[in-house]
Length: 76
Image 1 (spheres, rainbow, N blue to C red):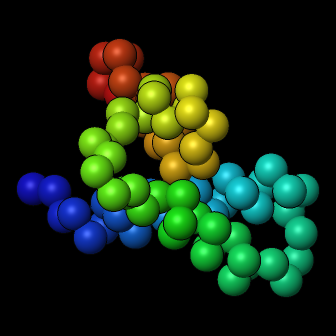
Image 2 (cartoon, rainbow, N blue to C red):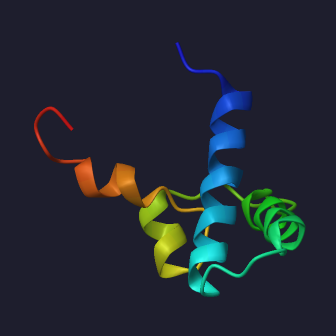
């Protein structure tokens, strides 16, 4: 069973992490990174949900890269 709230939280958590990583792991900017991750993972008005592949091509930080890496791997 999937829990949408957990999926959303995990997407925001991963987006914040990747923003932090991309900026060189700076200290003291967690609040900013989380805020930007929430905005990045929020659906836009009238926008259909995007697949992770589409998110990567669009440059969005909320793509679930680990899931993409194991998508077609047996047992992944």
